[in-house]
Figure 1 (cartoon, rainbow, N blue to C red):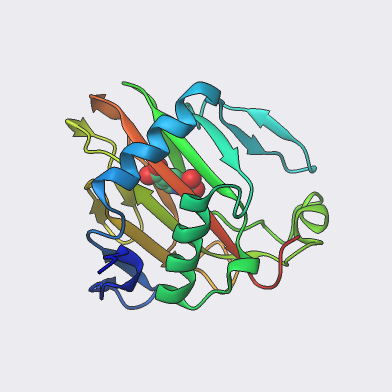
Figure 2: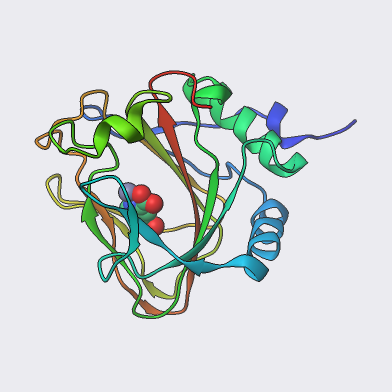
Length: 205
Ligand code: PD2
Ligand code: ZN
């Protein structure tokens, strides 16, 4: 039979109840991880961060490179988006595209919130379609020799990248005390490839 991994039962492990932080090992196959790295590599560009006033810029706080795939752009993306939707119940249409990031040695993403701060002037523009971000899924595509953990400093939590593992965390209210402050610790040795998938309140078009 066709052992499409999407049909296999996956164990969702709860790391933290409030806020919800969960991991799923083997969420992607090794072949899927390798394919995503191969597909992304030719188009990696320095990552950007959004600015308070509604722009985007390169930043010393986010020193990865990355590339963006549209929703369902490729069969593998489509399949993984459906898998994410089935696992966590956010409709595919609420998701932003697929961002594949590479952190070289020394690269990091300093602690931040993924939602847009309602008090900032640029936020209306970012949330016009889909509303605010309410959850994040990270897909780890390789193993880092040293460093590169996803950290939640307010919770004292560190998640070590495991190839094929998914990390999900939710922040239904865009408030700075939501305990979902998180970052990507510097890669000390090796490199790190990860997918970021940001999920919105409503349909994002
Ligand atoms: O790469 C990570 O571990 C990471 C950590 C925090 C990615 C993001 N945030 C993100 O892309 O939002
Ligand atoms: Zn983040």
